Structures are given as structure tokens and as C-alpha cells.
Length: 374
Image (cartoon, rainbow, N blue to C red):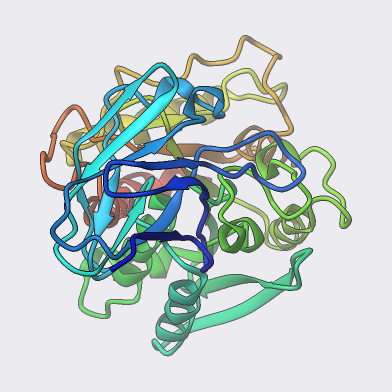
């Protein structure tokens, strides 16, 4: 059987430079459209059952975050349901992935993919739960729907949104964990949260980039998390629609969910440095992080991004813009592409399952301080 490489599917990204045998596979990651960003890869290796294959991705040295490759291991799956890590090495700009396929096809990716088909299945499944409303906030440049899920009857408005950077697929796996808990009628945490707040949840802020196999941008090459100070319909309609919906409800709590390429930790970045910052906001931010660290061994507060200096926060970023605009508690949750150093898993690394579990803990942490948000 002839060995082949393909990525012509939802979320796929790779270019074939050479495919001449199990140990002669050279590939390159395709750039995001209208952008120099690239790091996400997702492809299928066929025709090599039982062969020890060595796959070389040759342009990693010029990727968006080359510091993310040392210590990283790629994920593989034979059924696209269960993903495990495989031996991976990085040297001199080349990422080398070793895999021996157990079947005729194996899928290899930067992180466990979250396809647009799975996204639509999520919308359909969650939308059938009692008390849930699904709505379309608007359309993307490629004509896809920007979905929002509303659940809860309380007076507070909680906004959760993910995948501004589409290659950070752990963020939508996290969303599955949140949604599954929130709709559970027998979950006491969910019942209490639904009584206190109305949740507005955007599981995927960047459907176009997700389908195209981008790392960081939408169809126009815009980094959505640098568009919140002045989004436009011709460049960043996703942010226009989300911000309009937030303006309509107000925001008491917001979490923007991401993945970090380099740091092997789960952490939260705040809004320090915004012009309108208050002591109450800062106290709530510190308390939320401390609560989550107590609840989850996967979360830590020692390692993260350095806070901005007073008055120097970048208001084009959603967390800073929302905290400044609404005077609320807002934050960015970062999860690793690598394993979490605090609680490593040699088989799966950081994974969809652990992303979903962390999401459940995030809701418990929110419940502990939700009555202090106003």
C-alpha cells in the first residue's frame, strides 16, 4: 500500500514536501490566511500500518511560538475519538514525530481537534436541554453562524467565550465540560449557579479559522483578541457581534478561554493595568484564582503572564476591554498544549478530558464568590 498524507478536511493543516516512505516524510505547516501566524497542524497518515514512521515538520523554527516546541509531544488517534501522545523531538527548527500506525490510517495533530461538525453537534445536544436557548449572534466572513447558548434565570450576567484563537482547541473541550455541568438538573452547583445568573456562552468565537485549520486568526487574518477596542464588520465581525450582545445584557463576570503554546501550566491572566481598575475587581480576581487553586490540582498561580503596569493594559484584548468597560471581574484562562507540569499524564498529557474536568472546577470557584460580584 502506498503511504500518503492528507489534510483536506475540517480543521486540517499540512503541506507535503516529500512522502517517499516511512522514514522519508517531510511536511510543512501552512500559514493562516492573510497572516504570518502558523503552528497548528492536523493531518492523516495512510497506508503505513505496522511501519515505524518518522514524520518531520521542517518549518517549525519560523512558527508563531517556536519556544513551544521543546518538551512538546504530538497527539495521535486511530479513531479520532481517543488521543494519546507520541514520541516527539525538536531540534534545529524541525519537529520530528515518531509513530507506528496500528491501522491503515492514523490522525496526527497539535492538540486533540475540535471540528465544526462536533461544534454543531454540541449546539444541537445542549439546545435540547430544558431552560436552554440557542441563538445566532451574527455571521462570520465565511458565512458561518456565531453561536451563543443561554442558560439560567438569575440576575447576574456571566459571559464565557472560547477559541478566539481557533487552534487552541482545548478551549472548546473546556466548554463541553461547562455546558454539560450547567444543564445537569441534579447537579447542586449548576442549580445554584442557574438561580444566580444568566449564562451567555460562545463555545467558538472563530468558526472560520477553526474550519480553515488556522492557529490564531479568522478568515481575514485578524487576531480577534486584538480587535476589542474597535472591531469592524469587514475585518472582525465575530467581535462586533459578541460585543454588541454583551452591551445589551451587561457583564458581571467574563472568562475568555485559551491555550498557551509554551508554558506547561494552567493559569489565569487578569486585567491589571486597565485605566478604570478598582480594588474590588482586583480582590475578586485574586480570590477567584486562590479558590480555583484550592479546588484543582491542575491549576496553579506561580507561573503565568506578567501583569501590565498601571494604565498600560492593552485594551484591544477582550479581558482588558471588558473589565474596563463594564467594571466587572474578567479573566483569561490559559491551558497548555503540553502536559500540565503540576500533575503530568505520560499517556495523554493535557487532554480533552482534563480540560472538561477543569471547567467543572471553574464553575465551583465561580459559585464561591458569585454573590460578591455586585
